Amino acid sequence: MKPTLLLLAAGMGSRYGGLKQLDGVGPNGETIMDYSIHDAIKAGFGKIVFVIRHDFEEEFRQKVVSKYEGHIPVELVFQSIDALPEGFVAPEGREKPWGTNHAVMMAQDVIKEPFAAINCDDFYGRDAFLRIGTYLASLKEGEKCKYAMVGFRVGNTLSENGTVSRGVCSTDEEGNLTDVVERTKIARIDGVVKYLDDDDKWIDLADDTPVSMNMWGFTPDYFKYSDDYFKSFLADENNMKNLKSEFFIPLMVNKLINDGTAHVKVLDTTSQWFGVTYAEDRPTTVARIEQLIKDGVYPNKLF
Image (cartoon, rainbow, N blue to C red):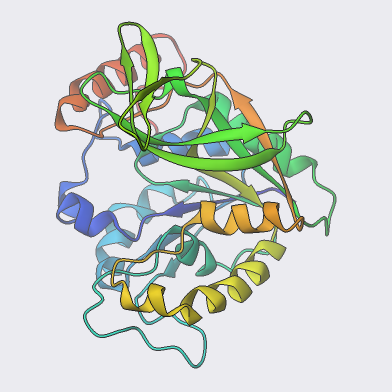
């Protein structure tokens, strides 16, 4: 079966101040998300699933989903604060849903095949989609617990306008993920990539150190593990008291790695990540897209 692409877009409305302000970076108003979907189709993905919020469904269908008609099947699923297992109620005062892995869980009724989960506003690049698409397509039917993560080389993921936050990855001799540590301040300083550690010291990182950009590959059994662990997460009093606690994908993945349930292959990519972390990043992003079009990587008009 062809793999499915799951795009985490539930935060889109609040992040951009409404869908009307979805920022076009291509010559015909194409968004970063459009380039991801174009690359996914080229890489052999057979279906797109968006996780969104109910309150902008109609506008999302009109402005986003309609573009892909005739190119690839699209389904919508919905994330909300009260999408919780039986017996649990969202605490009073909580304003946002429960994080990226909670968003992934919303798709379990419509995804029955291997799938990749990505952010909707990061430019991942053609090579990254080929790597994850090829891996997922190679899995045997019914195969379980053989997941993957595209490991971007940290030197290819930096902003010229400030520090970035990245999940720095460690691997074993077979290239399987052993740990992901979130480093909230990474930058190139005097030509060397460094991160600020917990003691406020800058520590060198090799340019090719793999980092997570939230591009994961799973098989459908991942949903059941997530359901079970989410109940434990919610049963923790601290997570319920903290109105901003989130059930992140790396939290779930680290749990499955540490207890020996799953292996996560780290797939190296030469893709150059970019996005709009800072407002000042936008001109660079537009210029890079223009260059990729000139180089023949993308057509002038995508959809």
